Image 1 (cartoon, one colour):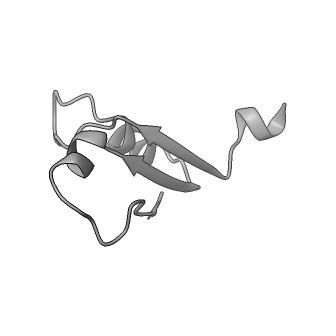
Image 2: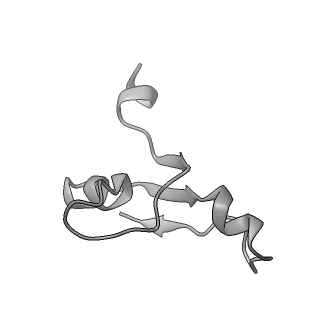
Length: 61
């Protein structure tokens, strides 16, 4: 249960690219609330518009 409640990393599928107040950006909220693990944001819409050098970019909280 600890692995579920205190993960070392998370993947956020469908994360918004909007930032700032009112954007409801889960990644920003996780970092602001002190999540210290790895975060892998995935935005399928961005992938469809062109190739990316890295399919998953890692952000450390």
